[in-house]
Image (cartoon, rainbow, N blue to C red; front, side, top):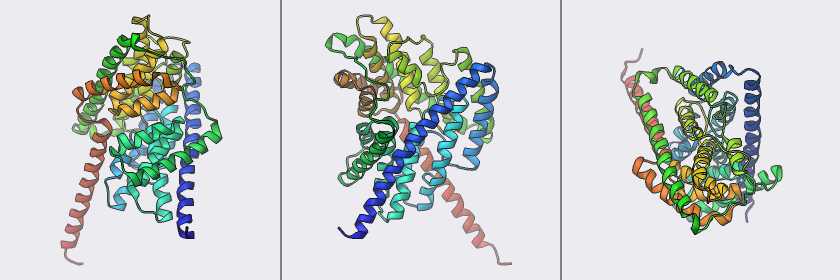
Amino acid sequence: MSPKSWRRRLLFWTGAGIVGLVAVLFAIGADHAQHLFRLAVAAFPWLPFLLTPLGLGFSAWVALRVVPGSQGSGIPQAIAARHIQDPAAKHRLLSPRIAIGKILLTLVGLACGASIGREGPTVQVGASIMLMAGSIAGLGREPGLILAGGAAGVAAAFNTPLAGIVFAIEEMARSFERRTNGLVLIAVVAAGLVAVAMLGNYAYFGHTAASADWHDWKAVLATGIVGGVAGGGFSALLLWLSARIRGSRLSGWPVMVSMGCGLALATIGTVCGGLTFGTGYEEARAVLDGVETLPWYYAPAKLLATALSGVCGIPGGIFSPSLSVGAGIGSVIGGLLPDSPLGAVVLLSMVSYFAGVVQAPLTAVVIVTEMSASPDMLLPLMLSAAIATTLSRLICPRSLYHTMADSFLELLKADAAGTELATRKAAALPSP
């Protein structure tokens, strides 16, 4: 009850509230960025062939030269930072400067038509904010603060408090820690209250009346198999492309790689009538609402566009695009199973594909359940996610986020070793 303890609590709560505020503003900015791109393309259909390569090249250059550590999703950086003891090395992955750069460059990517989401970046931003708040308050417990910030980011980004908690435990920490989980719970509540105060208590995909029972076992089995194979294939493709680029001469030309990916994205998007640009939220929402069905080629095209966006060196996540790919798969499977409700098949496919990509079945189930306000689907979703995760691990034994986190750790170790070697050489030189 001492003033010092209350000061620490207030700073922690304030940091969590700021995470919620930033997540909401980030979401609004992302929607506007996508809307501007769609308006521009509607007026000038040829624009993606110019804007997307140049915009992605610019974003990759800034990420590399100005805010290194901001590339990609942001979740691997948060995971890696939890295992780093050196404050300087941790600061290279989580800092206010990286958080600002992450937000701005993700918005640039969306404004240029990249197939990326804002949820992964929000995790890195949230972790950076909470780490800074903990440092000011003198809390220590940095791994717990990073976990709390990431969970608060997921909760505020989707208005999914339970998903934020489950994601932190299942994917980021991969363990249940009593003291740390208290920080996570408080941070999620504080960030969630701010988000709800600004946007209201909404469901990300609206309230769906989808339901499934044991009569729909074909849909559960089909979505689990297809989603698991496709999700595992996506993770394997993304890791393979990343490794090939790093191990080839292309690693010396990162901006050219980004521009090449941008040109490919423009081609895919134009051929698909603009469907593959952006987060994919509108396409997934339209299928869930029964407004339209997606063409058979949407899911593979969106999967490829997301993979290209993921390896081109720009900041951006894969949450929303993955859910959109799942919706595309569900649209096709639903057409093949007319006896099963289309909305239920789409939700099952979204969960199974997302679980296949991140190999975190509980997170996939909880996040889709909260986003669609469909608690009646809980058991079928869990079964589909379990099938998908099992198949995904056969195709891609390595977890996507943790493998990328290991890459960041190896890079930091190599840089530290190079710095130490340079220091030793300098120390061995004779004085002038």
